[in-house]
Image (cartoon, one colour):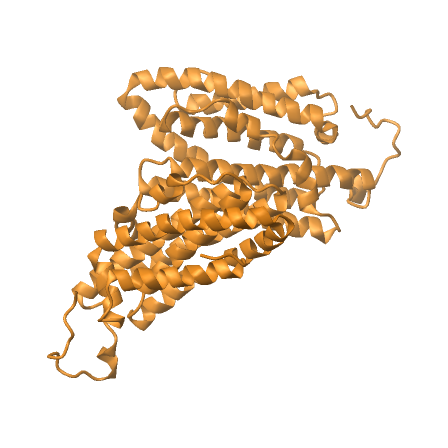
Length: 235
Length: 235
């Protein structure tokens, strides 16, 4: 936990924001951008795999293009990190595999469960990334906002699942149960990432000094409930 | 087989090239572009899967980016096909699954065999696509040349496999054997595609009226031998 900065001398407007000149902040940013880049590669993998299971060619193309779109964000992150002398690949390394477990643990039984798993799991991954991206300097913030921009996946999944659930009410019940399993795994990944990378918790506490991991996970669970509601399902 | 056109009246320069106004040629082009687009989606899948197995993050990024690059060609094909009133997704449909068998039939046992399989298999897929893209009008030709441009994958694989084989001579012997299995499957895919899509053979015979499937497959096998030689292996 970072101590409340009551004893720090008052500063003018430019130093309201943290600066990449500050080595501690710079390290935290490098770690955060490594997490984001790794998240994009993981999303690329996940969406590419989902695309291969799509029942229709049109869906396969939609998801493949979303996959490529996520990957393209890595280029911007790489350039930005290089602009202040960092190495993005090295920053990604510690996060390698952090999502592998999530992908492997629960295997979807059909196309609907597969769509749902990515909707919930990567929804939480992106929410988590938004949470730990609080309190950035404006320049880094702009880069991060581009990376975390909505890629349309949630709307796509909702547009596919709502009519499917309407046509087969049993499917809704099954997906609600499935959602509970998946969200448990996804929140576990977030918890694990926070525990293994204390710098991420420090970034959160820049914006919310009173925050702890439990509160952050609670907020993620809240957004998850809203995501389930969009499908007419209870979380 | 198309009859040699000895009785066709002589034509001036503009009609030297086939025209998209000709319904027969237009259908053939639509089928060819469907094949190409499907080939790009299949290459996207294959490279994305290979990327996930990469031992190092740097290789994972190289291959993931190549995957996205292949997929990006589908956008250009879609626009071109739409420009003369066609529907690319409909044209791709008949080719769906034509490569699935190739991907499933032989499972690589390690990273080297995986790289080799894509090098050989998609090498032949692209050679085959070049063969059936003979005799196009210049406008379609330009679009096709962009799609079939070298993506650097072969150079990448050669740069990885040559030092690996030098370090472990047994690997060379194993990969040479593996190459023979893979090339058999890949040529089988090409043969099957020609048999199922007679329009493709007709496109070939525009440029080489004396050609048949056996001659085409022989040429593909020849390019394959050169590909193996780059690795210092016998085909």
